[in-house]
Length: 322
Image (cartoon, rainbow, N blue to C red; front, side, top):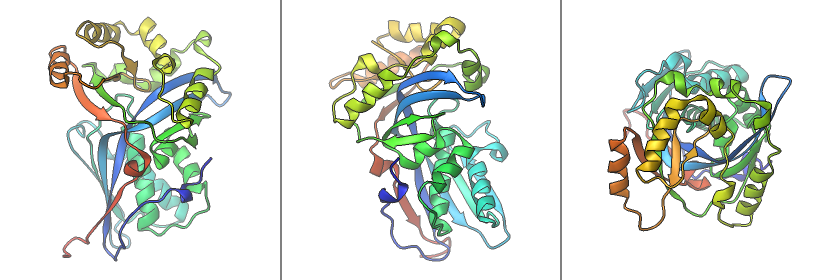
């Protein structure tokens, strides 16, 4: 696995009291296969993920010694999320505990990624907090230690430490960075379903042994990307699509309407319920957006985001400073 130390983050010099702002991009799974259920209760997976320009914004500000942790959630999709249980808070607490220090920091997360949807917003926020605190607290860890800490917070969190495109295995925490994809444009469609339908645990519990595969299609896709070849649509696979098809008629009805309205092929984002459709050059995006909104979907245009952009960090002048 490539070390994080080989990935550069271009930031200006910080002064005492300066804060940081980081992108926390959404992701899609170009391929996702479930290989087996493990003795520890997790599932072994093979997946190729890539980051999008749809992103939360995470800002970190140092607080006086002993002031503790403050987490503030804002933005379009902050409603209904309890800051006390948010992954961004968990990341800050876990890192402070590991360092044996007080988590004296204010974390502000502007939620722009719909949740739940399978787009990884919470995991991405957590990774942004870990990356930011590593700089804010001048952490000098050996390669692999930050990834190991990230894996204790969530299976997708290590991927977001790298961003860009990567092949991930294990329960998702083993990350092998790939070359950046050729730019891809898409529409994300989020159906209007109650939150109970959107639980990842429900879909994992609904897996049958016959859903398990050997992961060869995902590995083949990763090999094509490594050769800078475009991903073939035949290898855009997601095991959870079969789970949804047989067990969630409400979602299938929404997807059927999108297909009838002009979506040639829909791909599930992670465990869903959001789906994405690739958009070709010359497509009438405004017309497509209006059509799918008429069918009740939340529609977001997105593009793949290369690694350097996904890891962007901005230094914020100290509050009250010039």
